[in-house]
Length: 54
Image (cartoon, rainbow, N blue to C red; front, side, top):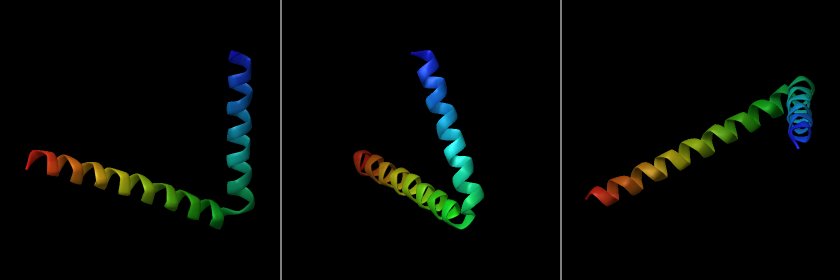
């Protein structure tokens, strides 16, 4: 089971590196989308906590 996880992790890393090398613009877009999603989620949690306090 541990070997399967290692192989999956290595495949994921290779895929990410391949994507970055072959299409850096697209990779940058995906990273930006990811950060925007995390930012929106954090903002939503902040607003929720603010509403709980009031």
